[in-house]
Amino acid sequence: MSKRCDICKRGSQKGAQRSHSNIKTLRRQSINLQSKKINGKKLLICTKCLKTLKTKF
Image (cartoon, rainbow, N blue to C red; front, side, top):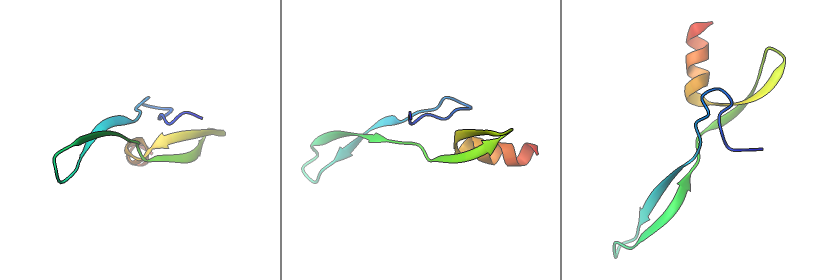
């Protein structure tokens, strides 16, 4: 199961975590995925798309 939205295909991003001595460590920032049933199919949807779908219907 991939960590990607089934509607907008948005995925995780890379970010930098900085320590007190300003050393950069790369880390992943994953998106907020929710499992929802739409038209009988189980989809992984990001909360941004979920909010958009609620306003349309």
